[in-house]
Structure formats: structure tokens, C-alpha cells
Image (tube, rainbow, N blue to C red; front, side, top):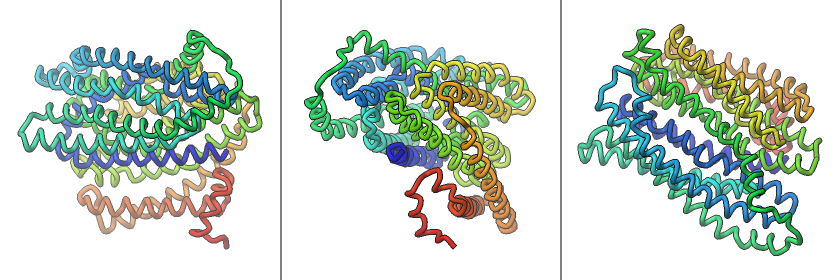
Length: 539
């Protein structure tokens, strides 16, 4: 359990910092390039994220599972051979993905735009997509090193490299946009192209960090090899067969969110035009999938960090047939998600107007803040899908994740246009929420069938979490009401910030206090929570 918690905290902290930086930089970025620039940026990054996942073939996460399995069997040679072969594979697939995105950019751009967009818009969209494609030459090879370290249940290399990648990327992005757009008086498309090329620069920085870790850890890894007494002598053919058997479902799990975004990229503007809302379609698309998504992804980072941390531990327990330990690991993983993400998304939904206004300004705040309020709860479903899919991977039921994702995508495709027609822009959010919720429900059902896992304890804890969240929500609403007597967040950006800070502070403190007093924190997170006695003394 301690390894899961330690790994979760390392990865969650690093991922949170990375995503927080990714949220903060959008404030000056949006001010510099405006809604049109944000829309161009979105068109480039969605196909890039999908091809990035396809180019890695799910191999980094699969390597994590593969290495964890053979390390538990004390066959370190097989793990090392897989790592070496995987690097060659990722180099090849990265080049292929780069060529596909670079030369397919114009076709992707034409699918993304509606009939009302101009030829110049098509040319600009093509350009920014081609600029981001260079990152595919380096990111796949870099990511497999992370997977290798994670398989050794060493999460620090991944965490540190993530943060460094984000810092360098953002610094290059903001400096590049300023120099090109303002200092050199370049076009908006050239500025956005520079911002998307920053992904390549960040990838180089991350790779350097990982190589430094590799140099430091290699002597220890070599000593493991020297102490090894026997090996399973798996052929490369069987090795890749096993690895790709793990990896296949990881591809779809990794691109779940980008695929939902891609569906909107190809259908949203036309559906909005059909609903008579073409004038706000581009800005609404950017507000949902770039600006709001940056805020929503903050609580989801816990799910991402937990998924990476829980997979090697669950794989090890399942391989060793330690089923009592496995049951506890699954329980803890799902309870951590409920404990931290449920109140986070509820709080963000209640404070959506204040949050959007604080970060992105007051322009059409009532409309865009409402979109964030609808989108926030979807973050819980995304986190649950990531974690439940990783649990299925750990117990060798990874193929079912393909089924659950397929059902979700079918729901999104079949309801998106209809719901946008009925509810406007938030219809696409509702369609995504229904789709991901269906996929999560199927995953939870499969986990129970595959491991005989009982949800009774999870249900009881979730019920308590829901009650505490309701109390927290009342406090947040009270803060909003009182704060609204002094400030109107729709007209006063500093007022929106004040209400946001007070709401987060009062709501978060209330929830933390209640969770501690009811011993909820101790039951979910373990004995370490007793350190909170420095803050809250038992009465």
C-alpha cells in the first residue's frame, strides 16, 4: 500500500504542478493571441495527441506492466531486453507518425473547419498542425524510458521530467509568441505555429532529464542483472507478442479524451451552425476544450497519477496471486479518487463563473462560465475511466477497455449533434459525460466479474464523501452569496478572484476538517494522515 501511496503522491504532485503550469500559462497566452489563436491551437493539438498515442502503441504503459511482472519473477534480463527493443520500435513509429501528421495536415484541417471558413483559415490551420508534428520525432522514445522506470516502481524520473518538459515548453511558447507576433510583427498563424513547436522543445528537455536519471540508476540496475541466477529466455517474437498484447488497449485508453475532442473538432462547428449558433461556435469550442479543459484537468491529475502508480503494484499482486492484497489495492485506488476528485469537481462547478473570470477575463463570462460549470463533473468520469482501465490492465483484462471505450464513443457520436441542437454548446459536454459514464460503468462491472471485488466498502465510503461534499457545497454557496453582496464576478475580475479564493479556502477547509473528524482520511490514506493533527487537534 505504501508504494501505491508514495508513487501516487510523487506522480500526482508532479502531474498537478505540470497541469497547473499548463493552466496558468493560458492566461497570458489567451491575452496575447485571443479566441482565434486559441481555436487554431486546439485544431493542432487534438490530432497531435491522438497520433502521439498511436505512435507509442501504448508501449510505455505496457512496458511498465511488463517490467513489473518480470521483476517480480526476478528476471531482470528480460526486462532490460524489452526496454532496448522498445526504444528501437518507438523511434520507428515516431517517424511514421510525424510523416502522417505533417503530410496529412491539410486534410485534417479541412475536416476540422465548417463550410463558412475561408481558404486562408484552412492554410493557417494546416501550418500549425505541421509545426506540432515535429514533437512526434522525440516524444515516443522519451516516454518509453518513463515506462521502464515506472515498471521498477520508481516514479521520480517521470515526475521530474514531466515538470521540466512543461516549464521549458511554456517558456519557449510564450517567448516565441511574443517575439514572432509582437516584436517581429508576424502573423497570428506564425505565432501559434511557434507555440505548437514548443512541444518538440519541451520533449528534448524531458529526454535530457531522463538520460541523467538513467546514468545515475544504471549501476544499480546492472547489479540486479549480475545477481540474477536464471532467465525465462523469451524470444523477441514472444516478447513483443506479450508486450503488444498488453499495449493494444492502452492505445485506446490513452487517446480516449483526445478522441472525444476530435469528434467535437469535426462536428461541433457544423452542429452549432445548424442550430443557428455559428457566430459563437469557434469561441465556444475553444472555451470548452482548451480553456475550461485546462481547469478541469487539475482534479483529473490525481486519476492520471494514480493510474500510473497503481498498475505495477496491481500487476505484481496479481502475478503472485496475492488476492487479498489485490482487493485492498483496488479498493484504495477507487476510494482515493472518490475522496479527492468528487469534492474538487463539485467545488469547481459551483465556482465556475469565478474561476473562468479570474483566469480568462469577463468577456461573455456568464456564457463561458456556465460551460465550465457543466464540464467540471465530466472530469470525475475521465479520472475514473483512466484508473478503472489501469486496474483492468493489471488483472489481464485489458481487452475489455476497448469494448467500454467503443461503447462510449458510439454514444458520443450518436448523441452529439442532437444534444447540441437541443442545448447549444453544452450539449456536446452532456454527450461526452454520458459517453464516459457509460464506459466507466462497464469497467466497474468487469472489475467485479474478474476479481470478485466487492463494492460495498467503496459504496459506504462514497456515501459519506457525498454527504461531506454537500456540506462543503453549502459553505461554498454561502461564500458566493456573501461575496456577491460586495462584488459582481461578471463585472469585476478582482472580485471574481476574491470569491474564488474565499470559496476554495472555506470549502476545502470544511471538507478536510469533516473528513478528518469522521476518520475518513485515515481509513482511505492510512496512518500518515495522523500528521494532520498539527492542523486539527482531536477534541
